Image 1 (cartoon, rainbow, N blue to C red):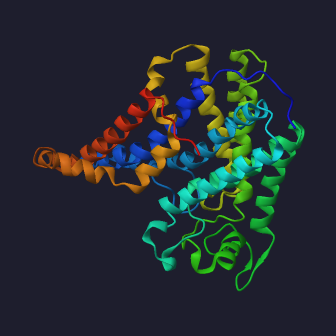
Image 2: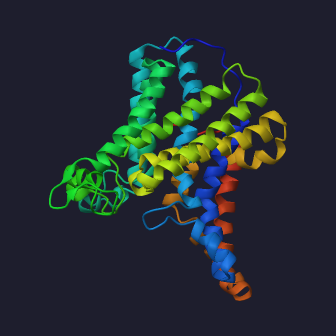
Image 3: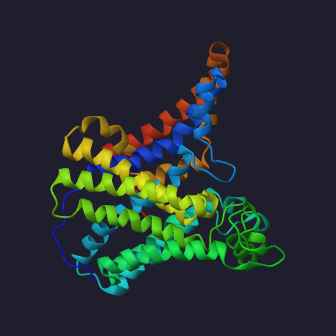
Amino acid sequence: MPDNFKIPERIMSVDALRGFDMLMIIYAGRFFWGLNRGTDIPFTQFLATQFSHPEWFGFHFWDIVMPLFLFVVGAVIQFSLNKRLDKDLSKSRLYRHLIRRFIILFILGWIVQGRLLNLDINEFRVLCNTLQAIAVGYLAASIAYLHLSKNGRYLLFVACLIVCALLLTVPQVPGVGRSMLLPDQNFALYVDQIIMGRFDDGTQYTWILSGFGFTATVLSGLFAGEIIRSNLKREKVAWYLLIIGLAGIALGLIWGIWHPIVKKLWSSSFVLLSSGICFVLLAVFYWVIDVKGYKKWAFFLKVIGMNAIFAYVVSNTINLPAISENLLFGLEQYVGEYFSLVTATGGFVIIYLVLWYFYKNRTFIKV
């Protein structure tokens, strides 16, 4: 059980970073694709490409969105669990909370991408969504926080990376041969297809064995949260986050020479690289907001971040740009190829107004 400590106030930089991630998910991708559709010049083509995933190997900016979501979840584990421990909750009640959150995230994942709302068992997908990756990583990292020492959690992080690497390179895949970090030739995909059968998501993404990588990513966020909530001076906290982030990026790139960076497999090199970038982003946000005190600009992001799960689910289940198109269709004759950019912006305005209303009324939807 972790030692008791005085719970500090909310860290605004963490809320803002969560909001930044949600902004990327619910708006930025559509914005840059719409911008490129209107201009179709090399620069906007490059930006649009950065908001798509590479076919297999490599890393685009869009690849940081999902790891950052998991990372921020990890960053608040210490605060949320110690808050409950301070209420003297029994272990059974605490575990009921963890399992309840795990189940809700899984169900929301089914609603968003698991085709649950189709009400057709033949179209249902068991594992297929970021929220389910969060559920797995959150549960494992929370248990680790409750029962392992700080050094034990570090060892668990390293163990997850090693297990990821071994499972993707050592086993034999029937009919293929030794597992390789290639499409349709890796052990992780084979395990998914064997266990989930017709309920597999049918893509090249892997989920079951990638749970080790999801856990490592959430743990990296937990480590960042522990640094922020330590007794270090704020300036030192920012520097620690930055140095660790740069080291993670370097290790990920070096390890990627022998063990390629593949998001679809959540390879250990991908974990190191993406976690390093998350540390750097948090360092920048923390330095600007919590060290230098420039907070007013971050209110826009905080509004989104305080209801992140709600924003994610709504933006992925309701076609907000289509609603915007029904309202703004008259503008198409004036903006031409930029109309998709207009509808994307209109859709974002709709969800943001809802989030702003929730924030003003202190309505925060949690799971």
